[in-house]
Image 1 (tube, rainbow, N blue to C red):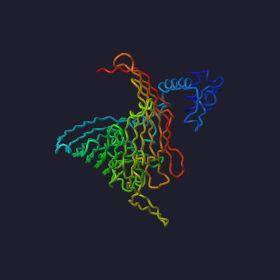
Image 2: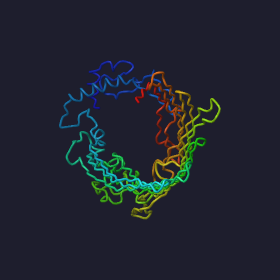
Image 3: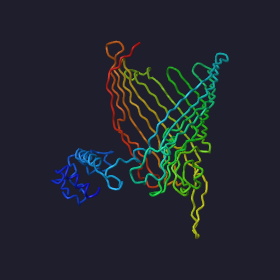
Image 4: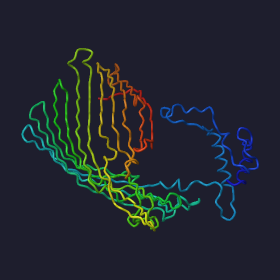
Length: 461
């Protein structure tokens, strides 16, 4: 802020000129931060102590100063229409704003056909429609503009209306040749709609710093999956349920985030022509079909036949192994080494796993039931997940393998329908960690810690 504004602030809050703040009473010097440190604040073992956090400040003092700045800023008259000393960040406050509505409807027809006593066929078809209307702000170079930005202007608000309608056929066939064996085969079709944050008509063009364009693709289509599943299941009182399910999923129009360069601005509605060669951040439908195949196995059993106290043990194990391979489109900009150094944009692809897809998933639970008491420990495991796309393998990111343990305890009370329960989630406080492949440096790390629930439940029959 200007010297005069700093002077007005210390006049309004004269204690800022005293220790430990020591502001210059004339306003000629910038404000030092040393007086704002709070040595009593303890951040603890933030993210298991792998990251140090320092320079804790006294938020109460900062709030007092900010409130006074608001008062002075509103009262200050700027000569010649100059920008006031204090203004809200209009761009930062509105660039991601949106509003809109979604309307989803569906109709389906299904039949059950019994062929003798051993075969059941269930065919069906579903029509599903989704109509969206979203309005968002579009900024052309305004990320670098001087406040105040005249918002809203009619030209900065864009509304996009879209409708997606799909026929979704499916058929299930079940064959039970003997009482302890079940064979199933099914074909289903499913949709995965884009997240609203990917489809709102947002546009953000920065021309002075970074030369980038954030352009949301309002023409995104839902990802359409055709699913083929086969299952063989064995069940009896000793084995419990043992099932093996191979599967194949064929996904068209997979949605993923793309970071590339603009070779032809006219391909992106609303993007100005001067953005050629700018970096582009957007979401696209993959023109290449993605095949996912794998096998899921599950065993559920109750060891009732074991001697006490082991007869109360229950076990559930589910393991899925997945194979996937996807081709991702990318525009590669090649710079010629010969004067005048022209650039050539080459449309190409690279191959990797399906994004957001682990290769291995394990769900394990082991419990004990006795009368109206039960305790169940469970574990969830996911192998490494491909999380961030990039043409260069070293710049792609992955979520590291994840293992979480939970515990659930329940005790029935003497009164009918009443029980007390105690649940603990994430016993081992596992973190979500995303790493760059080439360097191993984290791009993101989150730890939600341990949570617990204690309560009384009343079941009404």
